[in-house]
Image (tube, rainbow, N blue to C red; front, side, top):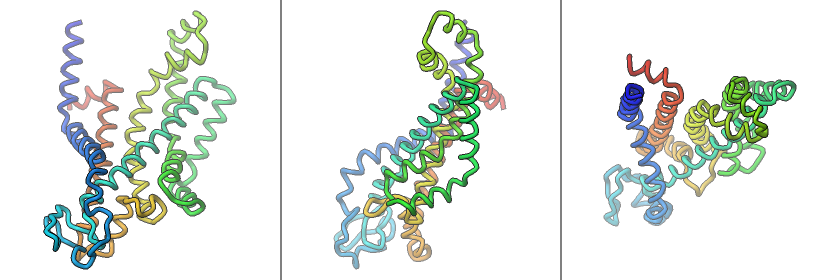
Length: 296
């Protein structure tokens, strides 16, 4: 018992000291903190269009005519770039997490239903999953954005309902394996209802891979939202978005590169942070992977 406890403690200590996870915790914690304080600061030059001629294209760490310091400079309308990046981070983080949550809920529901029921329902849901996987995701998102009024709600639903397939396949495979275990047969013999059996005994053991896929899906959803907003088909003005900020600054790459560097670096850091979280969760879900990495 002591040896097992010591091994887990050592593994846990190594996991917590992983530089990737330290980076992920720092970045995601910083973004979350910025999301909380951004509404308090958003009124300071983030949306106003006053005195544009003297405030526009201020360089990073520069001061405008009124003496205000702008750490990341200002955009073409004289708005503080740091504040707009923080406010846009709230939108991107919310869209990414909500879209990943929608994908997870749909994927778990369909995957667990098919994996547990088996037979015709399982084959039908598997065929549906394969059919949706065969549809190119980006053109489908562009079509949906063109047919309906773009906005935050449509972006969340469109990304969420086109990204559940990986979660569904992972949960289905786990449930199909778990329904043959001895503890499931014992629960059935005791008269446990199928719905309670799935919810209380099967799903908790099948959600590990789904959590990893969901964490990785947040980063993917943030990238998709930024791409849609860059094309003008995602989050609409006046709500700030990193993708829209990239599109606005692309015509000033040489005379004002900070307009694209700020949102671009923010997107890269946030996506990388969620990728590291997914890697860390995978090490926890599958101890063999974590042990192999520590030995290497």
